[in-house]
Amino acid sequence: MKSAWGTNSVNYDAWNHLIAYYNQNTGQSYMVVNGVKGSVLTGITHDEGPGKLRLGGPHHGGHTPDVCVASVKVYDHELSSAEVSAAYQASGAAATKLFEVAASDWNGSGNWNAKTGQTVTKGGSPTKTSFGGQQCVNINQDGEYFEYNINIGPQSMPILTMETTVWVNSRANNRGWLMGDEDTGCDRYILIHDDR
Image (tube, rainbow, N blue to C red; front, side, top):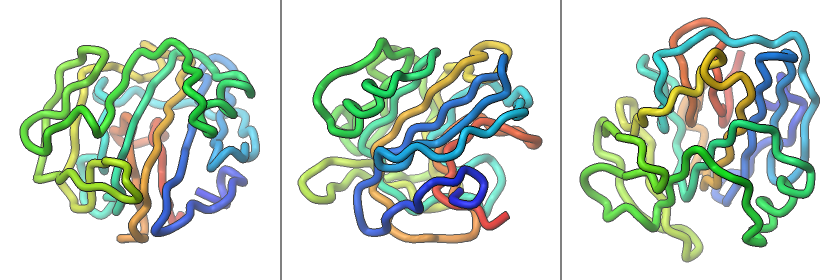
């Protein structure tokens, strides 16, 4: 992530706030890691995925992050600098969201239902825990995921911002893919790390 996006590395054994922005119309994308915006990449377009937001590694093995997710939000517009700053500082300011989950809303078994109503499919055995007093959902094995019926592909959502607060436990493998829509090719995913 650091080399491609020009961002700071995530902090291990700590909370991290990540924002990924994609604009299919302009070909621009960037990451914000803990309040610091990386390089704006241009000429980047994305293939259509299966049309579902997946929280956890993609369908193939060896890409699972070792993380504990506190919250995830998806927007159909770019967040302003003020909104990014407010989100990072957790001031309570919020833009209109198309999708949201919060660990505090999940009881630790069954489906982790979205506050915004999308249907969900669960894979594997994610667990609920907490770090530093904040509840989170631990995803750290291949096949552990929650998949939501919201199409974040570039045809359905040309402009996309994804936001998450996540505790990064460790670097479990060479490709820690956290969330997005992936089906080979260049897809929309928040990566904790990727050695390519």
